[in-house]
Image (cartoon, rainbow, N blue to C red; front, side, top):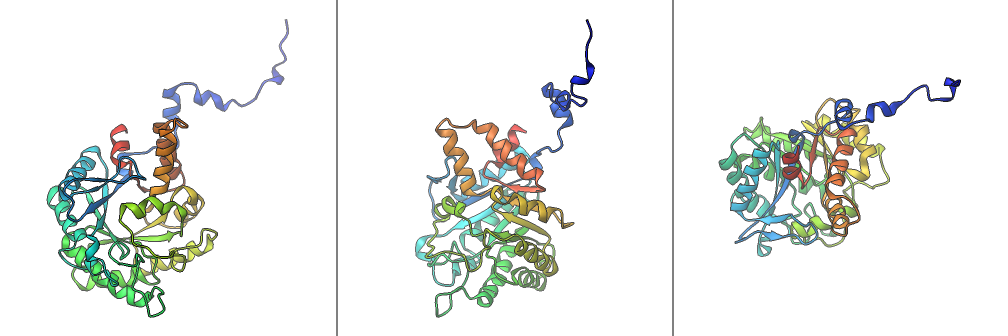
Length: 330
């Protein structure tokens, strides 16, 4: 009996997929708990956690449950927590003054978490006005109802100072105002907060996937944010924003959302020598949870697959509502 050896494949990549141990050994990218950052919402005056209907498993925390969530994240190995304040509706106004009140909910939450975990968990804060304005926009409006870029920068400088005074380690300016990173850097440096870092929301797109987040922060948005958040069709524009943010003093940069913009994330990650973050946003979370609840996908596998894809595209840090759960699994 003769054998014609030339009819068989010369290369067999499947040899490296034969067993779980083999696949684990040759894996090119690995998630680690320290890659993860937990976004968390804290609601002023809440007596009990308030479930967010569009984000099963996520709540608007009370001050007490936020402290507990921070400790749980730390114990699971998560690196950071990104805090969002939800003020009482009556405290919203056109200027978002609750956002710069030293006793506003976000500043109180920063102090609470800092008292609970100290410097063991990186405490980050959302530096934006949208949660605190009665019109729901990320900035101050002019007489025509448009977001006034430069007037908004003055408010951001105030926000940076009060958040830093409260003890935050990292501020995350998310409003996509021109020049925001430079103004915030100056404000921090001039008030003795040179060690507070800036995580720049460099490429934040005007996405349809923010829907559940609007419920999470009790948004009062009227209209849309297309005049300041980026057009989903644009990539070169992100690279211009990246260059500007780095020149203005960004310590880290972010792409948001994550999954629909993995090409942007990969291009940004391949172009910089600073840490790169990606935010797996509310709509991405909600899609997986909804599909899993209907039995259409394997929830745990889908979560890990999406996060691995974000890591593979170049993210050093991933903001995800599954941070503590995934860190425990890892």
